[in-house]
Image 1 (cartoon, one colour):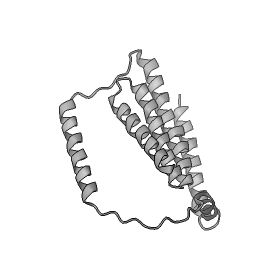
Image 2: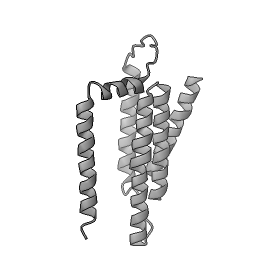
Image 3: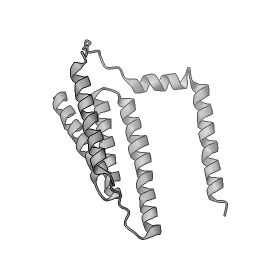
Image 4: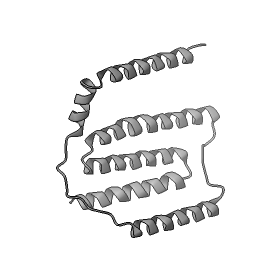
Length: 161
């Protein structure tokens, strides 16, 4: 069951990653990037890394890509032209990709991967939360104050006019 889900997620990641770099419309590329990052979060869930999956969805899917889409839409409104991107040198890019693919295949086939016994998955969120609120509470609070100062500074800079 897990192997089937892994292959489905891997196919989603590979296909959406290819679409990110091959689509002509930059907005559609950003949407495919969101799908790719959701697939990576699914792989994290399969690996029982629930904290990493939540961070992947919150920071990358929820923050970074939405910010990119917002910037694309605002820029599109300002310029009035359709934003398109394309590769001006497809032959050198294809040769580089092909050489990297061959290098990866050779290195994977020649490496002897040792398989360890399957360990019992541990809940990572509770351990990280307990560590942040006990051992690392001072650095955690310092970082929160620094982020608050950066946010206030960004608001002040943006509202200068």
